[in-house]
Amino acid sequence: MSLHRAWFVAAVAFVTIIGAAAFRSVPGLLIDPLHQEFGWSRGTISAAVSINLALYGLTAPFAAALMDRFGIRRVVAVALTMIALGSGLTVWMTAAWQLLLCWGLLVGLGTGSMALAFASTVTNRWFTERRGLVTGILTAASASGQLIFLPVLSLMVEAGKWRPAAVTVALAALAVVPFVWLLLRDHPADLNLKPYGAKEFVPKPAPVPGAARRALKVLFSAARTGPFWLLAGTFAICGASTNGLIQTHFVPAAHDEGMPVPAAASLLAVIGVFDVVGTIASGWLTDRFEPRRLLAVYYALRGISLLFLPMLLYPTVHPPMIFFIVFYGLDWVATVPPTVALCREQYGDDSAIVFGWVLASHQVGAALVAFLGGVVRDVFGTYDMVWYASGALCAAAALMALVIRRRTASTAMAA
Image (cartoon, rainbow, N blue to C red):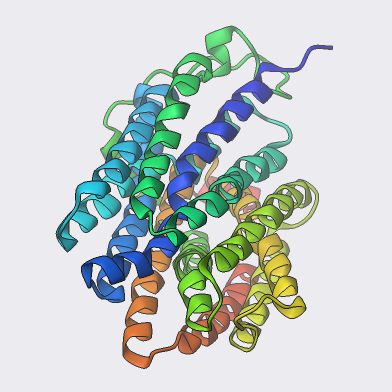
């Protein structure tokens, strides 16, 4: 029996997300080098990261709607080109506003179009079975990119070569464009195939005009429901405690305690290793268990681990820190498959766009903590307050996940 083409499409999407994820490895590595070379405060540099993270989320729902209008291939190819352009231009910057433009605006828009809404769109179109598993695999692609690029980029930065690191990110994004254009397909019907696991052939939907209008219409409709705000709130805390906190500030925080940058970056890369395992496992669990309870467990465990982190930062790597890295890695984006499943349960055909808006809240939370983390470090000289506050927020997210109501036939009719 031949392998269904959907798995090849998922493989191309996996490689594509890896290429786009190269930039996700850079901000935490460059905060100190940019501070030293240009004299910019950590708050200013973190503001660029904050803009990037916010646009990463706010672009996602519009990108999902654009994929319905123009197709996945075109949107993704343009997004990768924007990432390459924004990262490449940083090598010539001389002023802080140029950092905000390149890192914040260009790369933010590009990565936002390559966000998890892309994974959700591919999964919804090409699969009717194994959706949780595929969502987990595609989500893990971002962590795989971090694993691949972090050690190499950290060695470049440690040698005083942050510009080659930026060029490497640009080339990685450009290298994926031919794969997208030649191998990625928008819909199974393009190849006269049924989605994986489907009983019947599914015609390709007609292009949906008015992408921005549709994205906003879906938002206004979803915003009238309680589950949307609970999902958005929990995912905002998810973003605050991962991309905003650990990914942006773990390396400089560890460096504050005397740990060499390559060692701290390697620990962050190890998070990527276990993130792959944890996210794929979470996808498998989501196909079999109640996603609300999974989310509650994930957030509770994450919050507990953050409360212990300030006691684990030392100049050298020691066993308790390794345990934290493994534990946090398994829980990093394990929240994505159950969150996508709940969006699909609650909002049906509009779930990819709804998830895009939920992802926007994720990135707003990440952006806020990325910025505030830098400000707290400038003001107090330590990150301790941020670790403790994020741990408390995760406890709140666990409680919020448990109160998301199940969608029944009667609520579906009412909607």
